[in-house]
Image (cartoon, rainbow, N blue to C red):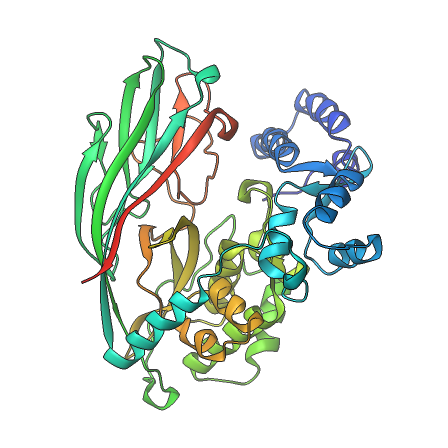
Length: 441
């Protein structure tokens, strides 16, 4: 992605977004290549996304944190900001905090967990029990049955107009079997083939009012345990999935230097992959981040700031592995257990003779923070059975093709909607994610 003109960059750094937009309009009238015009138009959309994500002033954020963390001092709040527990940018020259900053503190900070007034439910015990069973039995199988979708908020329904809706559905990934479409809110216009890299069910309807678009499906998740040994690694390794994939998977000088620092003189690809996994899980702190479309280089963002959410960490792992000539790719969708359903991303990497293996950087890092070395080791090479895989490629187009830029142009975990003349924005709809059944089979 090309750089911005200097004057616009200066206004962006201090969060003077109105001035940025004014300057962009001036620059767009000048004689320039289309690539720069596209970059400036994209920056307008990026500003919209940043303003959606960063909403709390310093005073508001401090007050919210004091209401959630017992006896929190301002000095402690500043420490949390300095130590990457709180994401912030400048807006109009003032420090402004991410809308999920408080959830991030509660999720990630273990030192303050006894002071949280409303702690979140922890599924570590369930994961440990399932992981023990996978290691002991060698394989576990789960049936998962859910209903997902999007519902337009009443005040944003444009009755009588056409709407186009893509909802993610399971693809036949290596661990996913027996996919069944059980029910839909409307007759689908198109269902992607089971191996489509970002698989969806597509609706095209005239809005009638109180509209919601849903799909109900079930599938089986079959997880086999991989016991890995560097001594068994083949001397011949494939070269697929080792290339750059712009705009995000880029072999920048910094990332190449970082890979060299991590891998050193190691030649065994399994050990190199483990070194990359260890570096990320030990050094890159989990953090909710701005929308991915607002980050111009996601892997380098993670490497420079040493923070990022599940997808940011997964993409850093994929990029570093590819630089190290280890095949690696994306996998994402939902994490679904009997108590929880939500979006999640992770990675795969390929080692002969094992084939495609899993790496869940955020789950591994979480295990390490909580003192579970066993779970940390498990998520290098293995995965739990609580996944719905909708996506096997990062930054892949939906089908039928959308007319407008997606809310998430890189991944698809909740779905996308658009009218004939513009996208439907996240504040205009509600996300439907309902667990119907999760059981071992």
